[in-house]
Image 1 (cartoon, helix red, strand yellow):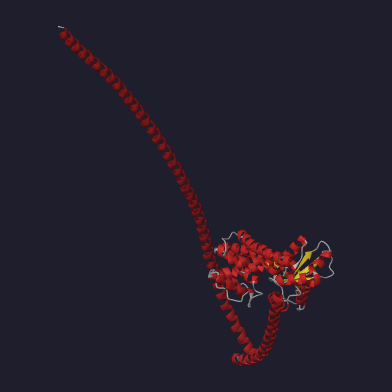
Image 2 (cartoon, helix red, strand yellow):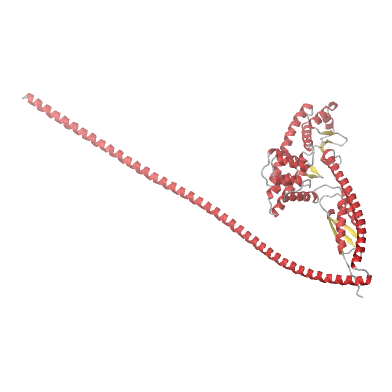
Length: 516
């Protein structure tokens, strides 16, 4: 019996344990389901957040894309409107030009009609004149008692004799003029050669003055037994002239770049105070570098001033040397800049390429930078430099022809030559002593007064114009035209002058009465 109770108790215990285990499992399962539900809810929430964030980012990105597209669209629209405005403006100018052209064409047609009417009147007058001449010939034949043919023979013989005399006189004049011009050209060539090599009369272009703090510095420059000055001169190729001039020495040399190097080096030595051969060598090397930098900077400034793109570096080194060259007291680099501007302006006015004209004008005197070291004129040397750096044939021809040594092959060459004359002949451009100026004016007046019928002569406009007053009863209107040409020819033959001189002959008739 006890065993049955034990078994029953065991079974009940097992059942109770099983029920308890099932209960515990059920509780765990519930907690697991609850955790899974939390995880799922959290995941859904995160997914919703991510989805919302993605939508917001996508919306922002779309807004940004839309804004960029709108901005680009506005810019494009603005560009299109600007182009449209330019086209409208260009169309307006074209219409104006067409109107002007049409008006000029109408004026030409009208003038042609007027010319035709005048031509018809002239033909009618010629017929009347011929009739009058025929009548006069008949009357002369009756009066003279000889025929027209006999009169023509006599007149022909007289004309032949007179022509022979005039031809002989003209041949002599031509020979004398050719001899005079040959002598003058020979003198020009000699003077040009002297100026390029040993122009003692142009001291302002061949010497530089260096001021000293005191006269004691002269002895330090010379050095013991002259070793400092000899070493300096051998390194720079420039002569130092030490004379009685107080607190100054003179640097003399025909190469302006070398002279500038010597000036910079000597001023550095004077400022430093240490003057001896080894110090001189170092300072001269530094001075050469400084001058090279100054040359390149001068070329850059010149190119920037005329709004041109950069040149090849080696060409800029040559162009910058013109900063230290002068022609009749006029700085060649500044003259080249002025010619560049004048050439560009004139070319633009004529509808030509202003950029090419400016480039040719800036380079037209580049041969002067090295003409002392090379044979030939500076125009031809400049043309060779331009060819070396592959400049356009138009520019090469403009450089070579600006002094009429080569025939100009295009309008820009003529423009550059004209700009060169304008820059060189304007007032104050080139130096001239007061004595030479007065002598030239007096010579102009003397030449004009040497002609018959001239009463008074006035040289005005700084010698650019000569006004000649003639006697009314001795010189008529046609003779006035001939007189102006003869005076101009004689001035051109006997005087040397920059630019051109205008000769104006004035003939005036005055009638005077008195009321009493």
